[in-house]
Length: 256
Image 1 (spheres, rainbow, N blue to C red):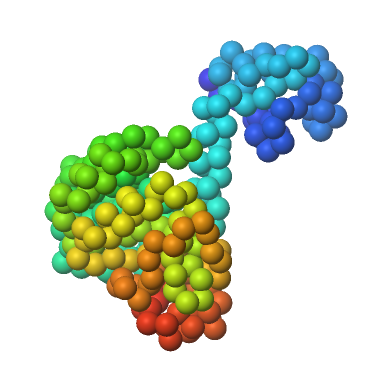
Image 2: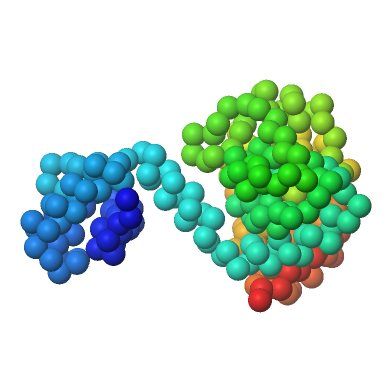
């Protein structure tokens, strides 16, 4: 069942601010408390919110979906530019590895309509994007679902990746500093990224400009040891020059 514009706005407010009271929602939307209660009842029956005493909050599943969609939509034009710039790097490739980042998800979307490819990915959304492509084989390496993200992790994932080989791997990053160090925020993700990198003939880091000039919890490599960084033209030019001086190859996609 589709939502009215008001009900969609209610759900957005709850997602943005957490638990909201009937009074807060009524004031924000300029309607009566009775109207809000009726809308909350509809949303609760559809599983979109959970009623609380005097208001509503998002359920765990809905919160997870909302948070993931927010990540997907952040800097989307930049991610699309990166995906477009990555396509020429696939020339002559038959097996591609993609991690669970939202940037490599855009690369997966760009593969639709292509043929003769095998895509190894730990990302359930990337696999879903390609599952009906008859000319593309999709291989999920198995493992545990990460609690906060729809992708696979754990010893089984790492072991299976170690037994595979790919022509090219595209990996996301949470941060890259001026020396070309590449970081991942969740430490449990690092072994899987290293397995992917070790299993590919060529490795590219795909990261938009918002990830540059920062550090995160754990360093898992340097750009100079891999084949390049694919980023977008929102990146600071002096920063990119510093990366090149540090031995990195930089490929820039242009936002349309």
